[in-house]
Amino acid sequence: MTPRDNGRIDAARARQEADRPSSPLVLFGPDRPLKLDSGATLDRWQVAYQTYGTLNADRSNAVLVCHALTGDQHVANVHPLTGKNGWWSRMVGPGKPVDTDRYFVICPNVIGGCMGTTGPASTNPDTGQPYGLDLPLVTIPDMVRAQAILLDHLGIATALAVVGGSMGGMQVLQWAAAYPERVFAAIPIACGARHSSQNIAFHEVGRQAVMADPEWAKGRYLAEGRSPRKGLAVARMAAHITYMSDKSLHAKFGRQLQDRDAPTFGFDADFQIESYLRHQGVTFVERFDANSYLYVTRAMDYFDLAAPHGGRLSEVFRGSKTRFCIVSFTSDWLFPTEDSKVVTRALIASGGNVSFVEIDTDGGHDAFLLDEPELFATVDGFLRAAAHARGIA
Amino acid sequence: MLATDARNGIRADLRLIGELIPQGARVLDVGCGNGDLLKFLEDTKGVDGRGIELSQKGVNECVARGLSVIQGDADRDLVHYPDDAFDYVVLSQTLQATFRPREVVEQLLRIGRRVVVSFPNFAHWRVRGALLFRGRMPVTKALPYSWYDTPNIHFFTLRDFVDLCAELRVTIDQSLALDRRGEKIAFRGPWWFWNLFGAQAVFVLSQRSAQRDAPSA
Image (cartoon, rainbow over the protein chains, first blue to last red):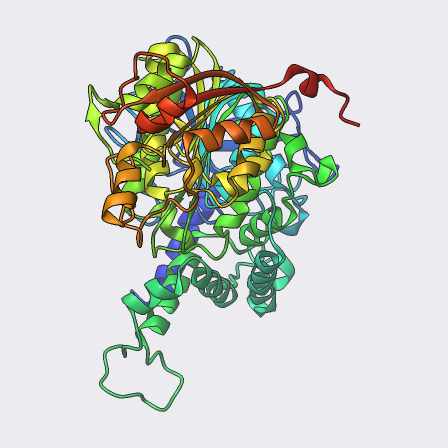
């Protein structure tokens, strides 16, 4: 099988996941339209989600997990496209910190995603063609609004906890801001109340890489049977650097050469780090839609929780009864600890109930996905206390 | 700062502070360590407790125990709390380690209706003895560090603190002297007596009501 064939097979399967996912699916019609921040409305839209554990009789043990930019709903099961374990199977599962023996865990794919929830790779019901750029832009509040409608559908009035890292953490903050009475406890990890200028800059580099690929075809690549694999791979490579710390890169790769004893005096992947990044890029494009990458990065760029309150973040949470546990990582330079401290201080000023934990690690931004015992102990203890406070044994 | 002397699961001086705090109060513990006092108060008094702790290790331990604690320090982070946010603010064995103790006490009184402060007494007879007879900086049970690695940067005595309370026009609601084991000295003596025999002191303070009710603008 040539790599190209391999790509085609994956592309076909990925296309299928976008419209008819292997996950449970809810279809919403004009009776439950999704109003978007852009002013547009989706009259026919769908949400794909995964659940783990059992909802108790009181419907009080639901934990909503929000996924990050390139994550999806496959938190703790084998991924249907990659065949790998779910992205948070260290955190979520029986006996894990988010214990599926105790809690009912729900993770929906975000609006704008490409794993079954309506996104640019979905088929536009009006045309029968993939949306591409015809899908209105979506925001973090739009993602959360869609999730709230899903929880209505599942009969869950108030989540015991909403948990997520990075863009997932942004959704957690948005949940707590927009629906304080529906969020008993919130765990925003490695995130901030807004996307920084530096973060927007990195995203723009990624988007430009996608759009500079001729195969992108002004966003119509799916309809034309093409794929901007090279552009998306470069976007992923650039982004991946921002998820790791200099120290962890150095420890993992140093200046070691890849399968050779001397430099080749060419532009082949001489260094291990180059080979690693190329691998990251290539494997990413097999499972992720390029337009989806544009939409979801844009949603993060637009995120600014305090903006509707004149920039006063403490106003966002005033009167909130939600218990917060904010977590940052020492080596995360994409969402540095100071971003989490800003949110912590705002919650203190508004009289909120907040814990703040900074975890000492070289893992960088991606530490929330790694084996970090202190993170697990924090989430485990905080969730148990929240469950106890809510009267769940 | 006092070395941990765990008896019945909680340091004697912390238990004593715990007993001063009423059922169901809103409590902020500044410098809450590994959360022993907060946990004790939540379990026995059903308080709504929060903590600030300087060491990240202490914070992480607290949160893993289910307590609401943030990383921060008394000198810098009290300003973020709103006025009268708590019924009780506790500062246990920490005042002597702050950079600006006077401002810290003022902040405590701003955010708490009552303030509980405990500190090692630098006028205890053993401390005086170490200086007077041995000519050495004292290392005692209440002050267990050598001069070169002590976190305690502002030493003061029980009577110094009484003077500060007068200067700040603060009401002393309660005062206790503790012996070397952290037990309450049962009988009440004049200040000079406690100042000599108290290894530690615990004060409960509140703002004078006249000052509190004065219009702020």
